[in-house]
Each structure stands twice: as structure tokens, then as C-alpha cells.
Image (cartoon, rainbow, N blue to C red; front, side):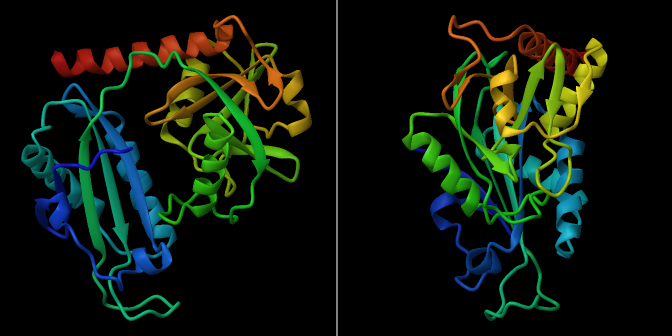
Length: 289
């Protein structure tokens, strides 16, 4: 079972988590009408903070919620101080909804957004050494998966199905092609060429996904942003998942296809995991210097 935070930031106030309450007429509660973001603090600094806050701002603009994310960094530091996490490794969750108004489908006017944040202690491993498994499922979500919305029922249903089948993830299939997973982006490798779905409306363009594509360029690895067909999974040499807390996780098996069985992730996956670790170490050194 998950952990509750000690403190919650809610609309300008920091309160104990049990005292954090929103109206039953908040549109985030009624419609899932909001945007969220997650980032991790490593050695006193948030990893790719600007990229995460920019994505939050972009998604808010996509659904016409007026909120200035530039006001958040100072409030985040207040929250971390109150939570005793200012210099500690932690996970930060941010959520902005359209606010509270009588229930109608049309967007209300002149309603302030509801802004909520909390932080939890969270220490990432240097390298994610888990051998993960996944199942495939139809991607029955809507067609704007590029928006990091709070309404995640499709993702939640898919992930619950995977967990109940003993897998870590559900890899989603739309029109015969792999899009992404329920809470990760997914990559494949064949003949040392990295394949992943393009960043269009059918996937969330994950920050870690973007970092991995840049690392591929740095390592001289070719990347093809083209969707892999479900029928081609068996012809791939490697697969891996990416995400803020997942980092880069090797996939041992998808459905009945086994990529490896000896506990050794593929060569390209390992190179990227090591490069990602070096990137984190480099950012840590910059902070220390």
C-alpha cells in the first residue's frame, strides 16, 4: 500500500495531509478535468525541473486552464521545508484542476484553479536492475494521450490487468501498433537500432523518453521514431521501459516472447542505463561544484 505525505500544499496553504480537502464540486473530482506532473529531487535539486514544469505549462494550455507555473518553484521549496525534505531525495506530485463550480460540461469562467502538491521520500537506485515483464492490451484510451491529464482510468485499468497477471506493465496496442505502456514509454531494439512510437497525440512524450533519445544520439545509436507492430515484437532483440521513477527498465518478456532468460539485459539497454546513470552523476557534480 502507498504512503501518505506528511504535508500537502493546497491553494496557497500547507496543511497536514488529513486536513487537505477540496470541494465535491471540484472539476478534478467530477470530471478528471486537470493536469498533473511528477518529478524527483536528487541530491537537493529536481532532475530536469525546467522540462517537467514546461510540460505542465504546455498541458495546461492545451486544455485552457490559466495558471502560471512560474509561481511554483518558491511554493515547492516551502512545501519541502515543511515536509522535512528540502535537501533529501524525494518525489514531488503536482496537480492543477479547473477549480470548483456547479457541475456542467462546459468550462466555467472566472474560476480559480485548484492547485495541490505533495512530496514523499523517494530514493532512486543508481540503475534500475529489475527484469520486468509486460502483457499486451488494446489501447482503448482517448486520442489525446499527449496531455498529462488526471483522468487516467484507461491507464489504471490496463495496469491493474497487468499486475493481476503477474506482470509489471501493460504494453498498449492501437491499430496493430505499439503506442506506449500504462505508465511508461516503451522502446525496442533490433540490430542495435532503437525503435519507439513517435511523439504524437497517441503517447505522452515522457521527459525520460526525451532524455533517452538524446543519449542515443550521444552514443551513436540510431533511433527510429516509428511505431513497432505487435506482430514484430517477436523479431525484436531487446525492449525497455522509461519513466520518471522507472528510469530505464529492461523488459525480459512481453506476453510469451522472452527477450532474455539469464538475468542479463540486452547490450543496448545496458549502455543506455549506464549513460543515464552517468548523466545523473554529472548533474550531481555540477551541483556540488
